[in-house]
Length: 234
Image: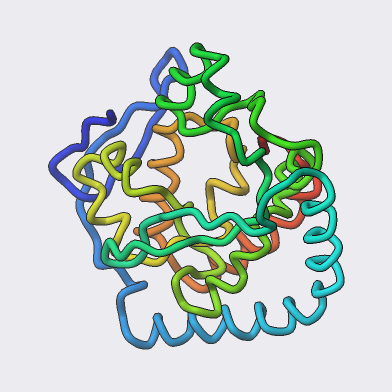
């Protein structure tokens, strides 16, 4: 678990060995919590998501058919995650795993250790053929656009985490829960799953404490090439 400093905001500098080292610095006002900022952010979400959903409706239907034909089970997987102020909600995803995933993982004890550490597996035997393709280009996350319409999530924000993962944030957990998680964010455009968990936490804190509409716009534009490249996605 990452040891949090007493200040809620952090900065990371690289040591001579290249390791990311957390350093304290002063907490600044979270501009994202201002009423006007909240309203602007919600307006941008709706303005982009509603026409976006209409545009990609045929793609969503095609993916749903492929998921259903590829393996038995539901089309949509509902993942229990943390939202604003610690509220638990279900994030929607296209199902990318076999329904007997726990039985499959039990055959690989070494992978369980990796999963408990990083909450991700690079070569996950539980993932279906269609699921691998969807994950590579983050297509499995498209149903979270409906989470954005429900205002459980925002288009840009910290990555979603499960309640169990909050312990990885230490004293920064409260800061993480001060905003809505995002469909994309600094983590998405900075290497995705190839980043260490410590780096993911740093990126979340960096986003929260440096938030602006212009930052959101930059991240949205950077997300498109990051997704198309498919690097760091599994």
